[in-house]
Image 1 (cartoon, helix red, strand yellow):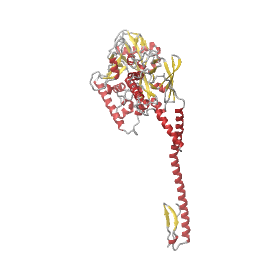
Image 2: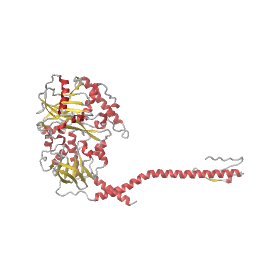
Image 3: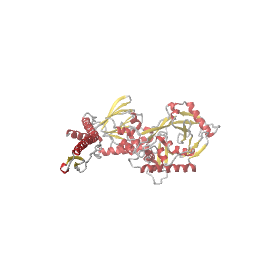
Length: 571
């Protein structure tokens, strides 16, 4: 306290305390009492009382502040809860889309793989009252077949990844492989043989070399170790990192040229993005080859890759259920109806249905080109923004003769950009070569002129086949003719979690979502889009049959908002 009491000889002073505070001076036991002692005692007691009272007020102030810090946000949340509840209640009871009796039960927004797959599932279940709205002049999405020098384009997503051709019985059956067989679609096994060249055109490695195979095994051991290390972390500690950081954790550091080839072949070649920009969680959650088998098949049917889509949608794609050249501009969704405002063949129109399945790509959500009323919640937009479409540019070249080994892909080293030259034989394609461009400057090739592209191709081919290379390019399809194919691959970015996949898939009232991005374990490939379309259609069928009580988020919101208003009214 800073005050001292001097007790004179033969003085006895008794202070009574209660909960740390002096409450009385018992003078009955003070005998004899020196007046100076009494005066000092009184002064000390006064100082103690003043100090303790001050501390009491300070403590009360601190408690009030702490209570305010605790209750303030809570009361703010309650207030916002009340306001939001009132607004939501008002919104739920205000004007929302009203379907006519003539409107279809289901709108399917997008006629790609997931949209057609969802429609086929509904059709097989007896729900034929649906409408497909497709922005292009044909259904198929990335499976659209385009004329290429009189031939049907065979490249756009026309690869079935994950097939057990050896019939080992260890894998599940890829649904697209089953469909390809049922539809009589011609496929060719994509070779896993790759030759890697140095800048002089000399082969320095082959994917079939024992050294390459041993390094590949080491790579996958490191990948497995990284997965185990991350899985051991608690949910609170686990934060998704890049696949490069995860591999570094497990001791994989590519240094030699061969190690860099193995690294590129297993990472950037399939993801099309540097591994520093790719989610480790996303890579670990790609179960395609583990579930379905090791082989990849190229659809090189003369009818084009789009024939697979036509086969799936054969019962309805040519009916009035499909509206082509119909671009969706906005979607209004409520508890009773979903309406889409569109531009159809240059004219404004509107389509409504009890439910809607949205199958737009992540890029459409990210661009904000389609408006939603009410707006999509931020958590769903954040989930869609967790992905990116990586691209490689493919130039198609026609030669007057076949000079390459059709079973081998050649990979050239990166200079200002790296080129992967792929040879894919098949009906009508024996003289075609597909030259793919990778790297941070892959867009450079899009601005080149035909003669520059020819010069670039000749430069590499003469390095490989020698100065006496005699084959001539008879035709070339390059980016600046607007016939190049931009092959997009969906990539999960660092920060992706399981909740990301849940959030993109969760329905919003009568608004359902499908697409390759909605398939947690197969999100990168076409079979993921197909499986997602089926899964979403099944969820909707369950809803239509009366299952999935309270699955409608608008219904939940209505109940919550109603309870919020009742709660606030009782305050």
